[in-house]
Length: 78
Length: 193
Image (cartoon, rainbow over all chains, first blue to last red; front, side, top):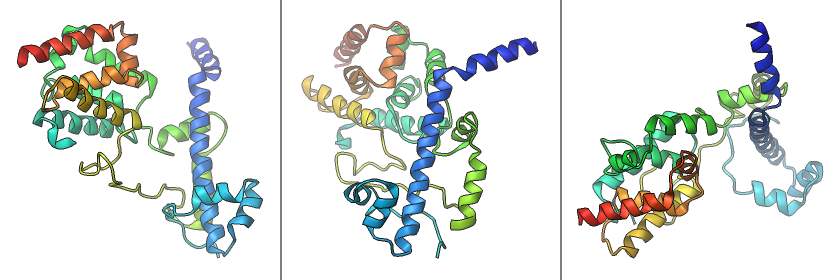
């Protein structure tokens, strides 16, 4: 019985479905974290250029992605 | 566009939205349209699909296998997936909430009622691009067949014509010939006319 479950666990670890699903979840987490952090930076008066520099992306890119986006339920951060 | 949908076709679209809710998915996809089309109470093509060899139980099992339930963003499934690579979503969430307040990691409410073909349709959540395409193709099929109204049959024809969504995939995986299904659907429309 335990051998069967071990086998199942071992098979599961190389199952692309599990791995790819983790990538999706991680991407969602990344996107949400980025929103939260960019909102906070803006509230603290950071320019798009400053945010872009730290994120290591272009100013145009960060502006396009985040300007005009509905702001999440974040508070504080001052 | 929706004023041309028959009462029954509207029921199918509403049924698809209900399926989305039942599965805990984010948007209404072609798979939810297919499930609604298989509902005998709402759909006039449910019988036709069964006769063509579509087993609703099997469709449900296939969708469950391919996408699963509860794909809510950063919901239980995401938490489970992140755990598999050693990330504790609850820990991340509580850290973020410490700095930015309760609910900081929750997505903002979606923007609703954008302009366009579907702006007049009351929706609590949007259709996936593919599902929208299916409904547009349903309209096109009706126009092509010179039918004034769009019924459940046309939605099915749209689903077949789109051909690449999860619904079409589930149907072809089950060994169904979509060209044959299309022929059957059109002939049932001819009989009704």
